[in-house]
Image 1 (cartoon, rainbow, N blue to C red):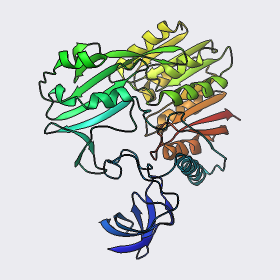
Image 2: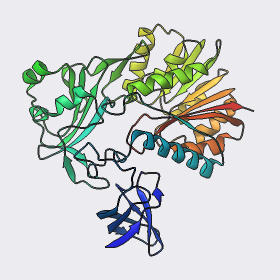
Image 3: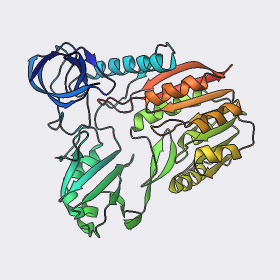
Length: 400
């Protein structure tokens, strides 16, 4: 056992201290706290530990409302006030962007109107008919019967998960503006849910086993800023409806009339459809087939006949577009932009690039390369994931 003092939080929300001169990461700690820890991982470069005893707690520490905090790994910052989590994310974003992209900038964090019960999607592991999350970096199941981060329709459904009659697998539950549920079960088992019971208690739009609907539909409708979006069970959609609305507003402010837009990693078409309130034309590229089908439907629902969608990997599909592009919108997965895509983007020489990112490390890496022809106009953080270490950001770049 080691007695240590926590100096600050790392980029994953863990406390940083030193044991025999080696940097050590300890979850569920705050700066200035003194704790006895047990090392759970040791190496020449770094250690990991867990708290055995709090000797001196921070005045900023609050009691987490969730009984699973510290074990399930779902929210790393529930022992902090919401204001302190925003300050942490601001410092984190500014530090990463400066360290890896060499850009010193003041980054405002746009808060979420809902700090709890904001997630419209949850993914649960199922082992021997028990449901929950895995402990961080393990396959140890933490059983849960509720989650303070997800919307109430999902929380209510968690009480009746046993009626899905699933022993082993994974369950993805989504809810929409109308408190309807779309349930995706991934398992090798041939399950027989108690459908009549579940439909009598919940607004279930569909239950999908792997890629085949057991009942109902394989998609439902979501509404953001008075726009309608069909979302399939396997399509990407922002998990926080309130912050998604604010993201739409930020992007709309940057779009001018008579522009041609390129929407990369377009998902179900949300950002491009929002942008074409003003823009005269847009192209969208997405690799998930159902998402492209959703996007085509969504452009029709929202009366956008000026968007053209392409199914395929962005790196290989992007060069097929020969039009002059005024603004490029990218919302890549956590891995960011690959080198081929970055080079192709630079060759387009669009006047503006709007980069939406869920990972500041890959954002910083990409910004460093994109500065070859672009200047950074603004970077804003959006608290898409309150009480977690994660933060969405949107960066506006203008061609020199």
